[in-house]
Image (cartoon, rainbow, N blue to C red; front, side, top):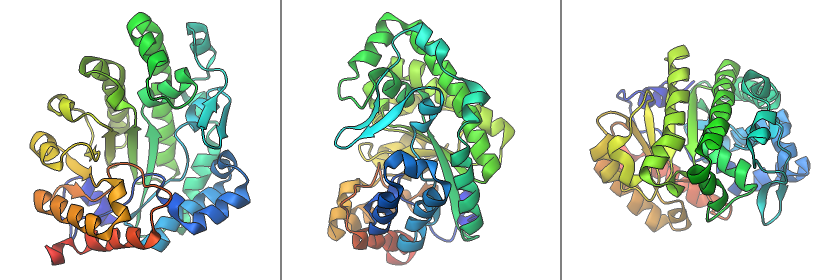
Length: 344
């Protein structure tokens, strides 16, 4: 694996600041679309290890990032817990029978039984590990329990979160029962990813911004911390990245046994450095839409580099890359990041 990348995750001095691109990094590549068409549909691509491995490796081979991010989807977890998942064009993921009661929670598969059904993910990791260059790291990931539970209760993506937030305030015991069950599956899922060959694991909390402060720590961050502590206790050599999106006002109370804090694009890098830079390596935080303009990309890279000084930082986007970003611009971003020490 990439010693430079893993050392950076642990805050050690490296020749340059490593760079990788947020999950979904391959979906703007024509080569990805070719494989996607062969697969027939998105879930089939996730379930076919040879194809999933191919698209995992594409950003490394074509764009030149320092680490590969496993190609999969966060919702394979509730899918294998027993919820029927489908993807509709223009709508995204849909669960036709969302969670509505404690009986629904109790009916879900849990723990190692559910995690054990995700063999296609572990097979993908093994294939990638065999083909990935020795100087590149492989990053595994999962959705945070709160983000997964949001989809499981809402049944699809949401802008209001009214169903899941209604349960928080009216049936908190149901929410905690669901979150606890998902948390146990995630622990085993990440552990099996590590056993299959990933070098780093990341926990994405895409819907962190939906909660007010006290509810965020109660219903999301505390479960993420529990997962991180479980993994760190068993695999202390594996860097853990936490990525909660949209919580700049909560940084004073962030803590836990992890190594890297992912800074989203809405959180000023200066603020993240002030609040967390002495305790954690920071990752991020360029606004993904800057990739539409080379000038805007260069401006952001210069700014982040000047704030971070090349230390305790991993260059990355502040959330997912968009599918219509020009490949040439993505390559330009990587080149800029890798030449930070020379240019600035």
